[in-house]
Length: 158
Image (cartoon, rainbow, N blue to C red; front, side):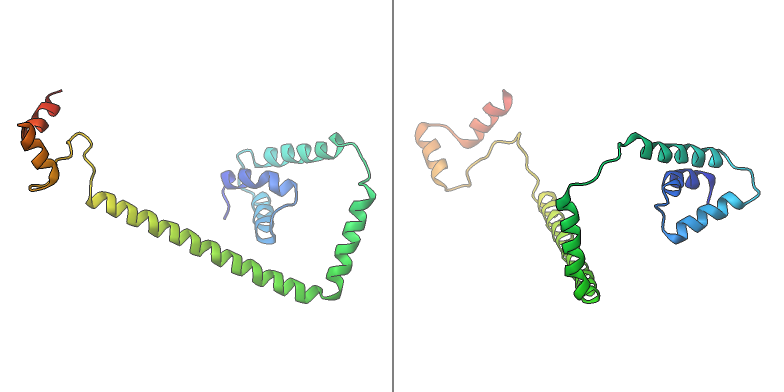
């Protein structure tokens, strides 16, 4: 059973006759119940007024002739193989949806792997990078008369 809050969310679509059959039936059943409503009737009335005003606010005009020609061309093109075209377009929609799901899964996997990598190897930007023992950086520091640990202590004090 639909609640009044759920009905009020669907009231504009109900007034526009834009709901599918199950939702429309649920809304009609909700209005038909004898239970007290919390603004349901008012919501439908207000939405119906807005829908009625939509038609009066637009000035009537005929579309340009090329629009009608395009419509006629589409009807002729789909009229010959309408059923086959519908099946083919439905299959392509399913395939496109499947590709989209695979892409989302790929991005989620990449994000998870990146998160695991960053969790396993945290970056510490405050600690200075020191050269491993026996590297060229250590020999260069020794020739200047300093040590890596002394340099690291001086930089951390600032």
